[in-house]
Length: 255
Image (cartoon, rainbow, N blue to C red; front, top):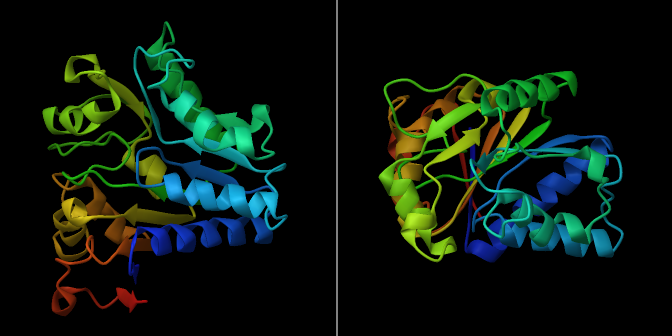
């Protein structure tokens, strides 16, 4: 596990954008796993800037998003379809047919999960997966639990996650209680993974991810088992990391 500590959110986001750009430079038809939420926004802004300056080309890239709320149509402003289109896709040259996001408004959500999982496999698998992390250690919408879903599936959101996401809705009552999410095995099959975290409110989750035991109660801790995982965090998110308790395969870089 490589842990890169940048001084602030802007520096962290630039580093992440450069890593995605490098991936596309090395493999023009890269399969990218993408995340939503507040954390990746500046990374997407930087990638748009790099695209406009001719530094990266998305025309052969294929993308798979981590998750989508159940019950929201793609045009709903709170859907992740809308988020990705509004914050990233409309400003780059990715082809519409290469964009993949679960359909949370499907009449058969179980079949939608199976179809999505199959499409990831048929693509050859994700080359680089971008992740955020919840305050409770969830990744995608894989919430702390005794057991975690292996493949793409329907998940119940915890009260903590619903509360955290309510800032994007008019009220907490409008936040969907279910979502489609890639499963943990699907995420861990990615050839490379980047996890982003910013702010003091993510510090405890990051500490449990890198210092704690692997546990389904902290889904992000399962990333310790991945051979090519990079955490890019700002100083606040890294503030509770205990360097003396890092495992031998962890490399800490303070920029």
